[in-house]
Amino acid sequence: MTNPLPSARAGRREWTALAVLMLPLLLVSMDVSVLYFAIPAISADLEPSGTQQLWIFDIYAFVLAGLLMTMGSLGDRIGRRRLLLIGAAAFGSASLVAAYADSAETLIAARAVLGVGGATLMPSTMALIRTMFTDPGQRAKAIGLWSGVMTAGIALGSVLSGVLVEFFWWGSVFLVNLPAMGLLLVLGPVLLPESRDPRPGRFDWPSVPLSLAAVLPVIYGLKEIASEGWHPLYVVSVTVGLLFAALFVHRQRTAAAPMVSPALVRAHGFAPAVVLNLVSSFAMMGSAFFTTQYLQSVLGRSALEAALWALLPSVPIGMAAPAATALVRKGVGRATVVGAGFVTGAAGYGLLALAGTDSLWLVLTACAVLACGIVTVISQITDLAMSAAPVERAGSASSLMETGGEFGGALGMAVLGSIGTAVYRHEMPGSAPAAAKETLGGALAVADRVPGLATAAREAFTDGMRGAAIAAAVLLLGAAVLAARTLRGVRVREQEAAAGERVETAGSQEAAAGEHEASAGEQEASAGKQVETAV
Image (cartoon, rainbow, N blue to C red; front, side):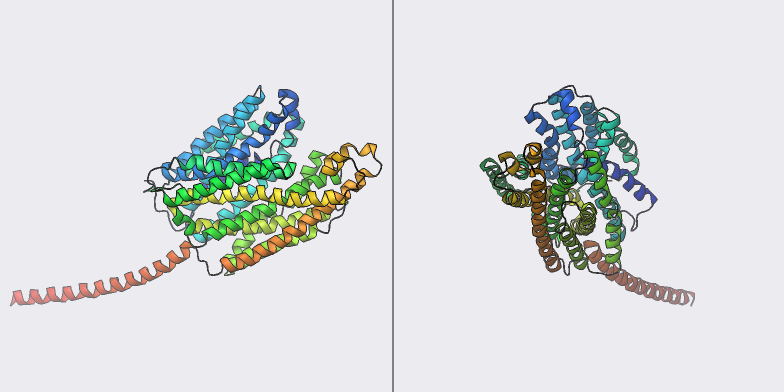
């Protein structure tokens, strides 16, 4: 059976299966940042060129983002558990190859396969949660846990890489994936139910290259704009990606069996959830662009010290999603909770706008407030999106949400990074060297030759961070208004189904009463016939 009818409430088996699902999710999210501290050791050992070093770092995220929609749709067709286990095998095998890579080319290829595996794992985990947890309250708790683990994994990845590289060789950052993937391959077939779309239609192969051509140029262009600044090549890349995106949308609207069904996008509440998820990722990744540099280059912390300090704001994240879920279960409107999450995020950016060049605890507090607000939003809109989507399209729904998150993260770094850079350049003295006017790192590299340059550069960077924080706070306040307008009155599918079940139950009870009366009448008629026969 591919779509078993689960019980109304999940039991110990489902919660144990959820714990197993959290392992690949944690590792996939960690792999986004696990090379932060390993790159210098890799460079010393494999001696990659500058271009190869960039591809070692970026190829994973590019492939992951490009294949999310394809893999989500594929899981709906061949089975989400099957795709998850295939992805786990690929992820584990690629991790082993990456750990013992003897050339830059081998490591780049292994990281690309890791991206393929990650693209299968992320939508599959969410789709299986949608299948296993049919009770709205239980599913909301499960999705809240999913959101917290994913966010924590990104923060934990950089710290783990720093610790492992400190005591072992750089390949150890990949070997940590093997035990978890092995456990998933052993326990997955036992604990996880198989589910797929019973009527998927033919797989739309032309949509695969179209989705890649739509996602990859946009992600690439936005990432380069964030790191290198505005350049015609990067603008052209984004434009080309948007043109292919238009072709992809046209294909989905006209194909007989599209990769992403237009009916899914039209599901009540799904489209607003995708947009609000994009804004959430925009805010989260946009802040990371500044805070990581602030801790290292402004406060002068080492890379490992900065990563350890950056873990502190992650501590309260574990309480944000459960608290939001509890409020919704007690009757507080989802629109109110999501709007409050955005307002909390805006307050975090407001605190960041007050930071000076020696404001460690203020910045950490701002990050904690921001993270709590954004995780509150992500947990609720993810639950909303997965509830609005039919079970048979859970993989496609999850992949669309995650693709939107990838776009939002890249856009946040590009837009807020550009605002910060513009303010930085405006505030730098005209007499500063050209390299110092470009980036804070460039200024610190030549600071020993120019008295007072380091202080001026740190103040200019902090001014840029404050300017970007104000812009982000305004955006999040606007998102709060948007959430209040678009989510008001949205009811999840299970609530509507429960209302229907109550009507059906009442009807069944009336029918049962009627059948009982009819049965009594038949018994009386039978007794009458027996009397007549006796006479």
